Length: 466
Ligand SMILES: Cc1ncc(COP(=O)(O)O)c(C=O)c1O
Image 1 (tube, rainbow, N blue to C red):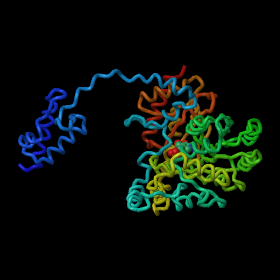
Image 2: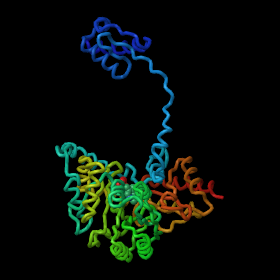
Image 3: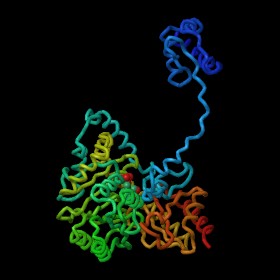
Image 4: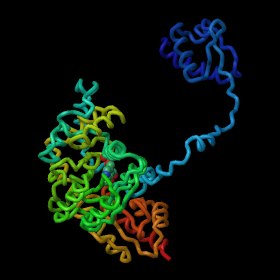
């Protein structure tokens, strides 16, 4: 036998020996082990070092190698002191944490805004990742604002007033929301939000210590009069909106409201954070251009992420601003995490400029249109007591009103027990919800699964109604 095959046998033998000996027993000497297993000194040394790394033996210089001492059984750690040390911080609730958890593998997901693997451009991503990994710049320090070409691409989508200098790359849209709330506002400041709204925006604003000011939206987006009233009443300097296919309702800010909304914000000397998370998700005629394109004086801070049209794991977004707000955000973002991993930025740039990108978007829209139609048809047929006020012309969510007699939390729980995950409506409201709702997503399950899901939902609703 050569030293290699010997060492395999020896490794097993030595491990058995160590396990058989009581704690703190001296092992045979190096020389004895060499002779017993017919190994070179270097191999014996390597094997003992490996056992030491795994905590099975300890070396005492000048004395020899011993089996590890027995660890005294310890009582479970008492971390109760932390409750007092941390104090009260009601602002960090569990809603977003629960929503972002992937469900069991065999369950149907109608709760995620992220697309399933079948709708991710895996071919484009694989090729882009291989190319990005080979670029020497990928592993170096880089301008903190991000890869210039990617910033230029995002700027060109944002409006004529924006150049690459106006864009900061962030690790996803969520990080950008958090940066805006923390770096442009101080704890206690009011922030106006259309209600209902994105649970992650609520979580980030609460974590920043902001005071949420809800303004009820309708199927046309936020009503300009109500917005003007809230701005005047609270003196808020920040408004958060998703003018395109709002999460959760799917509403698009109507064309005849857009100028009035922007004028109200400008007249109050405030900022509008435009979260264009569904930029690529028109399922019918094109939706209006971003409000950023009609903003003359730097009121709009524009956000677009690639995690929805590409893949949840591609944590890249572009945040565009002008004037001193840009400087604050730039410095704030550097203080957050210096810069986004260049490899992700190069992959995003490569995918978004690949010849196959527009084909991918075409497939994505066709598939989502079919899924939306399937889920709406199934709801109409199987849930006659529920209501959809707006069949969305884009995006990935349907906002479903449950019968008033139905307990929302119970529906979610019973559906989960039957293998279906749906989002409770409650978490999308800054305050108390006016009625029971569910957010039904058609981005992460195919048409057949969606129809099965609605059938499960019908059972869960029946079992939760009084
Ligand atoms: C409205 C909205 N904005 C922003 C985000 C954040 O997305 P990401 O951090 O994946 O870019 C989400 C995620 O679901 C969202 O729904």
